[in-house]
Amino acid sequence: MALVLDGVAFGLQLALLATGLTLIYGLAGVLNLAHGQLVVAAAMVGAVALGAGAPVLLALGLAVVTAGAAAVLLDVTLLRPVYRLRGQARVLLSLLLTLGVAFAADGLLVHSFPFTRLNLSVATPSVELLGVTVRSASVVASLVAIVALGGLVVLLRTTRVGRAIRSLTQDEEGAQLCGVDPGRTRRLVFVLGGSMAGLVAVTQGLVSSVGATSGLDLTIFALIVTVVGGLGRVSGAVVAGVLLGVVHAVAAFHIGTVLTFVILLVAAIVVILVRPSGILGGAGS
Image 1 (cartoon, rainbow, N blue to C red):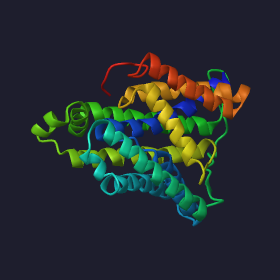
Image 2: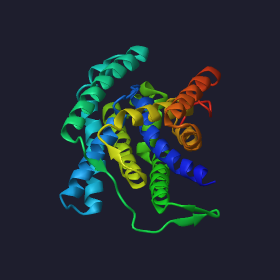
Image 3: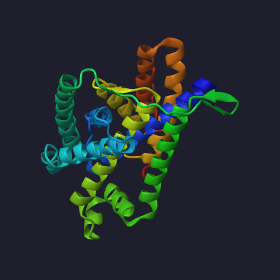
Image 4: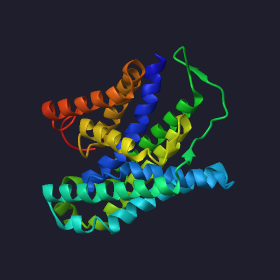
């Protein structure tokens, strides 16, 4: 039972990470292979700020802002040529460009922060949940993820901005005719996606740590959850994140991390073959 609860906590972090990725894909039509590097960049800023004596909340706020700003910078610079394309050409060019960004960011981060890690500690004892003793850090990380995901759902479903995002995702030309600005809305989505990646740095830092080399693993996790949940589908990313988080926790405990990655990849392949639209099927948020 403890493994399952740890898996749920980890799955909520995966959901937070994948939701940002799937939001960007759903609206902009690009797959960002540097998404994990946004988490690492945020973690490095937070760790450096904490090391310099900054208050914890300020340091973590800077981390989240850094990830959001980095995502917008990517949107307004390297991805500009991508938006002139449509369909598969847009996806393929975005994959190549963001893969290059990921490699460059990895090199820069490893060179600049080889021994730096964001490792936060929650100064409270373990708690009992459903008769099982659970680390308080896992509970705090889960609550942060739940609040963030809940806030995103409220934003998408009840606000004018959310309606603009959903309308552009479903019918870009129709949304433009109704007065929605695609460029401005896209930048907002990049801010949201990047900020959620920054929050993942915080939640992951609570339960373990984030180092300069963590970007690739985080991107792989985000892609697997996004594919299993359905590209562009936020609710699917949440469900897939929790399910795969539990599978990862149980499998990693019994057979090891390397084989667990293989299991998750096989699960993604099976979902693509059986339900190409994701485990929930259909479209929408």
